[in-house]
Length: 192
Ligand code: URA
Image 1 (spheres, rainbow, N blue to C red):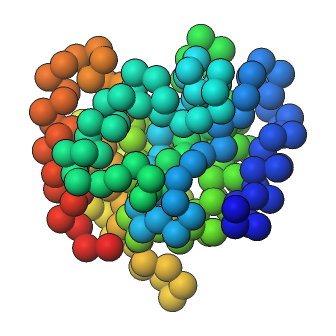
Image 2: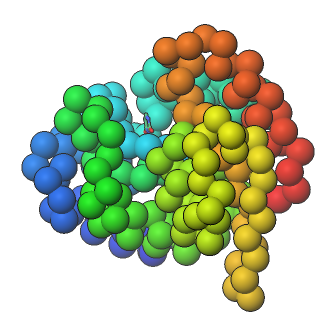
């Protein structure tokens, strides 16, 4: 394993920076290809992820796998992480203080992976990433910004940010699948 990602993993495994460290079973650091050009960011681990330590391995994960195949993308070729590394009790929404302390790890993961595309799955990921890259004024809610591409460029990094609905939305409303399929189809045509 890459030394830097391994170091981040070790830090997360012993992290007690917020209350979630007391209730989690396993932190979910993230998994995938270290040099992936695409980074997917979800919200937080659910029960299955908490039990296994792997991201997107439950129902939402099945939907994500289906969407990746629509886009012709192999799961092993991308990196998948979350805004929070530990499961919030009863899958409640992440608190802003938790996001603030936990996203230090996500920031480090982004620095190591250097993705060309960051695909934000759901409102929490979209809000954090758009704000991080200076698009705070474009955070309108996922309904308005899904499927759009935000270009960020600095002397050291060029990244395309693509917000999407969260795959779990399909488990509440099957009609979301068509919208997500359309957005994932578009993803495969973005140069990386
Ligand atoms: N939902 C997420 O946002 N992340 C996971 O890892 C699983 C479900």
